[in-house]
Length: 347
Ligand code: SAH
Image (cartoon, rainbow, N blue to C red; front, side, top):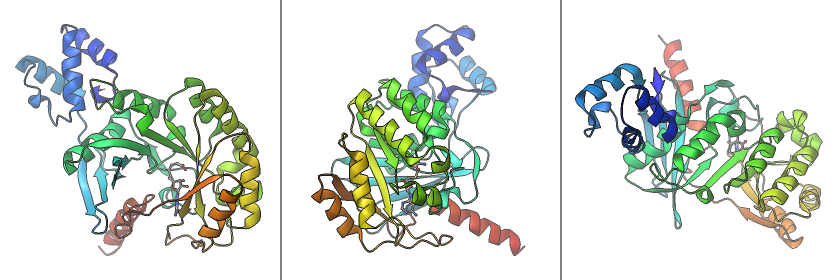
């Protein structure tokens, strides 16, 4: 079966040409797919015969809303999507003054093993397809009725561990005949897969790169992020400096503040030192309590921020949205998995 929605406009056109259709058919079908058509029968400007042929040869992914939680505090909406094979992933819609941002997942689970993160506890199940990534944006917009203007790849999974898919997703969501969301409105967050960062630098995309730093020294970082044992923090900073030189784009560094682990003054000073020569932006994140994790939120966020700012490094504290709805980092999928497990145990 052909996964048409994962195909580029050119590929859709070629697929239809191979079915004996004229070239313009490709764009017609592409437009339907990217408008969120739920069946080939909806594609009313195609002949009945062609619709039947598409049904026989192609799949059309439509994720189901397995759970939806709306925050009473700020309107943040969290979706748990059920995919065609029964796996689930999360997306979060956040409403800001500058527009609506959707945070999407790139994999079912994650194999990066960060010690503080709920997404990685049960490992990686599989990669998502380009269509499954696009569907999260598309169906969040359709279900909520809120137009999406920004995308962040900060949900479940490591985008640079599924990089070909992510690049294709970016091409699709950016397409003028599709959702047409500009690269400058897209952020990609990585735990620090250096070859992926180098590849992104070579591509020169206009997206915003976020790097999950969480510690500027190798000893601490290796303890909380296994990826640091493969790509040490100094190699990571070298890749970041090279990325900035090549693209001229400022990198955002994510830093979840963990009590007694990465919140010492000397670590702020080390961040300043390693950022020298590059206009980085440090985003301090209040640690979300994950039940399975021994880490506790730091109480030194304001002091850490002041220390960075005093030395000329821009540092912001992430405003927490959806505090009442498990709106972060694989927590909803985790909860659903736990409940399913308990349900099985009691049978
Ligand atoms: N794999 C990518 C993107 C997904 S995680 C990455 O690592 O960047 C999105 C962000 O949430 C990352 O910065 C991640 O480190 C952070 N995060 C994970 N668990 C967290 C927690 N319990 N509290 C705060 N931030 C967390």
